Amino acid sequence: MLVFTTIALALLMMSIDLTIVATALRSLQHGLHTSINWAGWTITAYSFGFVLMLPISGKLSERYGRRRVFLGSTIAFTVASLCCGLADNIFVLIALRAVQAAGGAGFTPSATGIVVDYFGDERDRVVSLFGSIFPVGAMIGPIFGGLFVSYWTWRGVFFVNVPIGIVVIVLALRYIPRDPPRAKQRRHGMDATGMVLLGGGLLLGMLAVSTLGEKNAHVWSLAFAVLLAISIICVCLFVRHINHAAHPFIAPRLVYGPGFGTVNLVNMIYGGVTNGAVALIPLYAANRYGMDALDSGTLLIAQGVAAILLSVMAALALRRTGHRRPLYAGGITIALGMLLLALSPVAGVSPYVWLAGSAFLVGAGGGALNPASRNAGLQLAPEHSSTLAALRSGSLQIGSITTVSIATAILTSSGDPGGVQAWVYVVVALLLIALLPLITRVPEHHGSW
Image 1 (cartoon, rainbow, N blue to C red):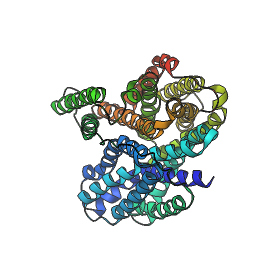
Image 2: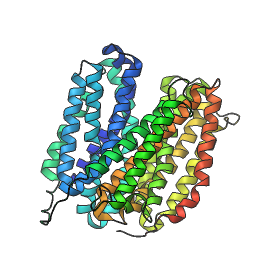
Image 3: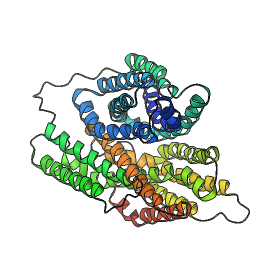
Image 4: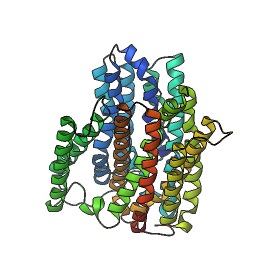
C-alpha cells in the first residue's frame, strides 16, 4: 500500500499539472506581459516535451532501473515546477515547461515497471487502478487553478507541485525497493539515430497538426503539408532503422508486431481520440448552448466520476471478463455518449443535465476499457513493461492532440461552431463503431499474468 500510495501521488501530481495550467493562462499572460499565443505555448511545450521523452524514459527505466528513473523524474519535475513558479520571462517559462515535461514523462513507464517487478500476482489489478488516478487529477486541477488565480497568483499552479513532489521523493527513498543488481553484460549504446528519427518524426507531426488550430489554416496549406511530409519521412526512416539495427532503440515487435500493433492502435483511437473529444466538451457547451465557464467546466466532473467508478469495477472484474469484452462494452458506450452529445436534449431535460449525462456515459465507457487496454500489451512482454507503458501514453497523447487540432481547425472556419462540433462528435462515434472489429485482434487473456 505504501509503494502504491507513493506511485499514485506522483501520477496524481502529473495529472493535475496537465489541466491546472490552462486555468491560469489569462493571468499568466498579464503577469508576464506577453501575448495569449506565447502563453499558450506553456501548454504546447509541455505536450511536445512529454511525447518526445516518453519512449526515452521507458528505455532508461529498463536499462538503469525503475526506482532510479522514478526518483530522477520526480526530482526533475519538482525542481522544474519550482523554477516555473519563479520565472519572470515567458521564454524561460516555456523552456522550463519542457524540462518539467521530461520529468513527468518518466512517471508512468517507471511506475508501471515497479508494479510489474514487485507486485507479483496482483500486478494486473494494480496497473489497472492507474486509470482511476488520472481522472481525479483532471477534475481537481481546474478547481485548484481557479482558486489560485482568484485568491493568490498564477504562480501557485506550479508551486502546488513542490510539496507533493517532496513527499513523493521522501516516500520513494523510504519504501520503494532498490533496483535489483543487474547481471553483468555488455551494454550497447542508446541508439542515438533511432532517438533522433523518432523524436523528429513525433515533433514535426505534432507541429503539423497544431498548425491546423491556427486561424484560416487548411489541410492543403504549405506549412502543414511540408511538416507532415517530413514527419512521415522521419517515421518511415525510423521504422527502417529499427528493422535493420543490431540493437534498436525500440524493438519493432513492440511497435507494430502481432498483438502489440493492434493494442497501440486501440489505445490511440479509443483512448486518445476519446480524450481529445472530451477535452472539447466545455467549448461545445459554450458554443452551442451559451453556458458560462463554470457550468461548462463542471460537465467534466460527471465524466471523471464515471471513469473512476468504472475503472475500479473493471479492474476487479478483469480476470473474469478477459480483455475483449470490456473493450467492446467500453467502445460502444463511448460511441453512444458521443452520439447523445451531438443530439438536442429531449423535451423537459435541460441542456446541462443532457450534456452531463452524455459525458457520464463517455466516462463510463472509458473507465470500462481502461484496465483492459493497459494490460493487453503488458501481459505479452512484462520484461518490457516500461517501454510498453511509454508507447501507450504516447499513443494516447498523439490521438488526443490530433483530434483537438483537427476539430479546432474545422471550428475556426465555421460560422456555426456549436452545430459543426455536434457533427464532429457524430464522426467520432461512427469511427469508434467502425473500428470495433479491431478488438477481435487484441490478445485475449484471463487471470493474472
